[in-house]
Image (cartoon, rainbow, N blue to C red; front, top):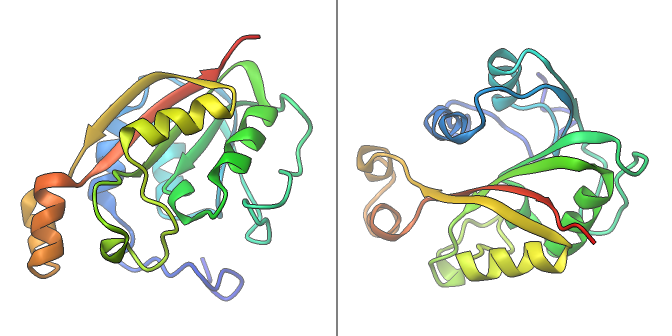
Length: 189
C-alpha cells in the first residue's frame, strides 16, 4: 500500500505492531460474521483480520474522514460490528466518534475497540495522542455515548519489546502500561 494518499500512515516493521495484533486477536470472539466498519484506512492488521475472520465483509473508512467532526458516511444501523483499533486516543472528541459508531451499529451489533491504557501524565503520551484514557473514563465515555461494556480487559506486550525503545518510558509501560480491549454494545432504551 502506498503511503502517498495517507500522509500520516507509514507502516514499517516498528509501526506494524504484530505482537499487539496477535494479543488483540487472542481476545476477540472465536467466530465473527457479517458487515464490519473498520475505522481507519487499511493497515497491516486488516489482512490478519480478513484471514482470521473470512466471513466478515470489512469496510475501511476513507483517510479524508475527520472522526472528530464529521458524520460517518453510512446510514443508521448499517453494520454488525464496528472495529476501532488504536483510534480514540488520536481524537480530540472521542465522544462524537463513539456516538457515530453507535449510530451506524445495528441494534444487536458490537463495537470492538482497543486503546492504550491512560496511566501516564500527558508529557509521556505519544506525540500523536490527544487522550490516553483510564478505565473509569473509558467506561464513562461509553456510557455517555449510550453504550454498555460487555467485556473490558487489559493486556500488555512482553517486557523485551519495550526495552528495545530506551529506558524510562518503556520501563513505566512494562509496569503500568498496556492496552484496553473492549467489547461494547448499544444500551437498550
